[in-house]
Amino acid sequence: MDIKLRLEEPRDYLEVEKMTREAFWNLYGPGCDEHYLCHILRGHKDFIAELDYIAEADGKIVGSIMYTESYLHGEDGEKVETVSFGPLCVHPDYQRKGIGSALIRKTRQIVQEREIPAITIYGDPHNYCTHGFKNGIDYNVSNMAGEFPLGLLVLETRDGFLGGKKWKAQQSDAFDFDRREAEEFDSQFEKKEKAFHYSQELFKMLIRSYVRNS
Image 1 (tube, rainbow, N blue to C red):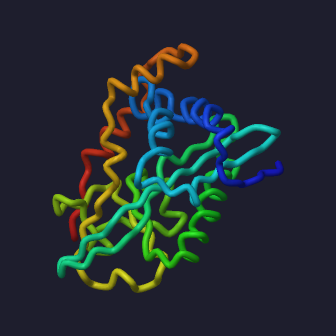
Image 2: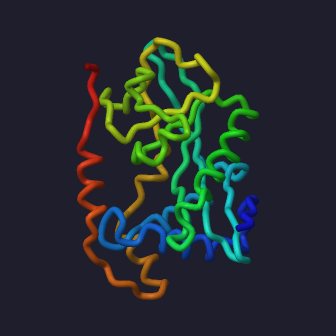
């Protein structure tokens, strides 16, 4: 299968949103709102257009990755610019074909070229450890509350940069959107049935899990 990676263009917006909706529907909860997040991210101050890549196959968009600016706050007062990605998704018909991995590799290379020292995300470790991500606790990187969620993952893109210092990871406020507005946005799309899926229980376990030093 021939996969083409390129920057997203305005003409792609709706197709990306539809594809994202298909990828996340009923995955983490009944329905989804990740397609609304795509919609609002593009106009947010923290959005990084140079890392907004899509994957094409068979003449259609089958994958997408979006980035926002984020920060690490050192215990000594140092503030370092990092980046975070999400949503990252692949259409269900094209999953497990290496498309998501290709999007990560492509954008990681750009992050390294820009000399940004780390990528921080919230996600399922099963999906990202293969790309070199570690739990924040392994780099002394906590959330802003000083905790170490299982889903807080860090990829050091400049070896040794994080050192032994304690850090707190700050995500963009773009993710703190109004769920009612997301529902209203979703009403513009083709109606889909909201339903329970076992992945929703796994997600609830993930977001309630924290890591501690052994």
